[in-house]
Image (tube, rainbow, N blue to C red; front, top):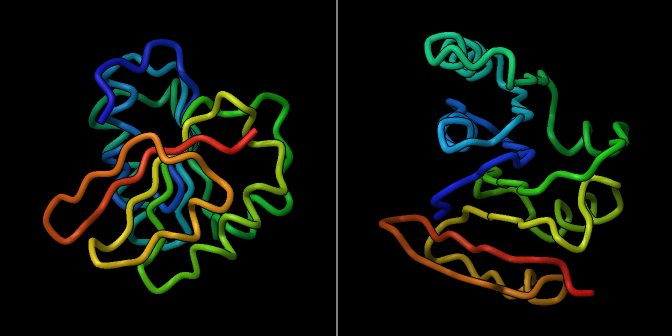
Length: 147
């Protein structure tokens, strides 16, 4: 999806194994915040960060991403927010929550991963869709907020 991430600040929400955030770091991102609530997945994220020797550029948060966005203001918005919530989580509720934070600005790129068959019309209400691609059972949507 992204060739270079030079100097970007990323948020990998619902981080899972941390693969997306680690890929961003390997492509030049200056910092990635990994948010994961599952204890087992969090252990995998931490282990993967250590194995890749990316501890200095990584911040790992053990919390529900939705709860964390509601209570944690940022001083500087992210350049990219990668959002891969469980497929049964309401995308609209998640979007409404994130768009009420200081986590983004007009230049922030949002990347959503959803089930390939899911109707993502809800995104077009708040975002300009820049690119959409289906890969196997997933679809990826790259978007920016409407100004």
